[in-house]
Amino acid sequence: MLKLYYNPISPNSRRVWITLLEKGLSFELVEVKYLDGEQFKPEFLAISPFHHVPALVDDGFNIVESLAILDYLEAKYPTPALLPTNAKDLVIVRMVQLATVNELMPAIIPLSPVIFGLPGGDPEKIEESIQKISIVLKFFEGLLDHRSFFGSESITLAESVAGTIVPWLPRGGVSLGEYPKLNAWCDRLTARPAWQKTQTPEIMEAIKSRMAATMTKTP
Picture 1 (cartoon, rainbow, N blue to C red):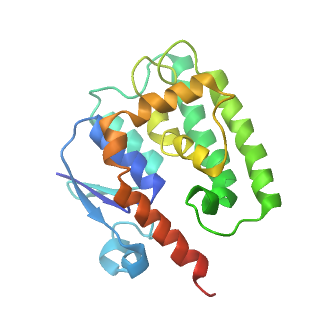
Picture 2: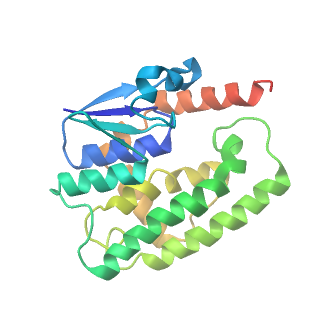
């Protein structure tokens, strides 16, 4: 059986967790408790030498890096397909994945306290963050057409990646009202069982507690 080493507050873990659920695969969840330092234990480092989650183990084969894990799952378990075969649609999915990882995720860091209702945050950095985020959202809005998802009428790996970040943005004061297609896309995603199962109130509270502990920790 597939075994996913994850942390529930990790968006990188969640994108793999969602993909496993959307593909209907049987798997075991193994939580790696960061605050307890479990990521540095020898048994986990033997699987993930960079001490990061997620890590996937498939019959003794260890895979790290979330985008690589998604590609592995798509190649080995192609039904249901989560990647288009048309060249244009495939590159839309890839652009969304990479823009999320390389542009959107770094941009939201200054907004994190606001998203989770915690004190702190530099107003100047927050404003700069919102400007950077708006560039990504405008790009995403332009990639969505008449279809329900990026490059497809059915869910793709673009949703697994961007869909773990974009729906959080209104919590940080980033309105999706200027992006009607993207806003409707978020509504479709958050109604799906895979999204609901991987973002429970308990998980939200765990994220808030983890962030609060990180912010109050002295160097």
